[in-house]
Length: 217
Image (cartoon, rainbow, N blue to C red; front, side):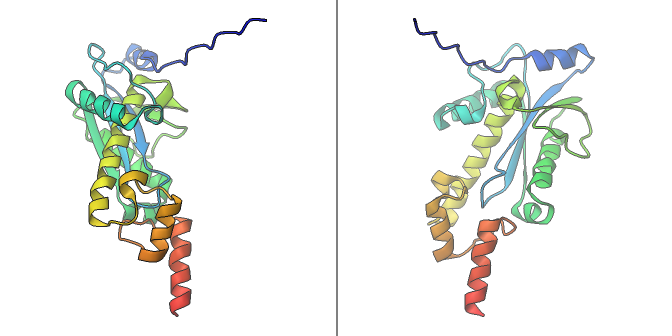
């Protein structure tokens, strides 16, 4: 019995944007965030409005691309699309919780666009208070070109932020782990303590700080 050739992986397309335009939208933006899981750093969102006449080739879910390719595509997007990036701070994450903080960053990113009247949101929830019509798409960064673009911009921007913070707070490995709870990061957290950029509401950070307090008291 012969081998069945593997089907090529489906790539994001522009159908969701076209459907929104067909329903009367004028300026459709894709929206995604990066940085929900890390123990340190902000959560970052991007809103991107693509020009159908100038869409960079190779847009895809940022997790499926190398760091080099993400950086290349992010530069291309800034040159030919309308891009807005926004953050929610560690203080906001700890005060609101990570989901609400991510939605806050998304609202800020959409508000930062010069024009947008319809948003395609990655995930299953429209952020409260979003001032444009919106549609959620689960796995949208792998299905929708505008959301894929937003995922690339958000990821590269947040990674750059963490590389910058790594220069101010060496030892945690943020230049490579971008704040995620790797073994090396957790070990550094135990030995060096928490920085102002650590999310104290996240259990690993909270537990380490609580243990330190218990030992010192």
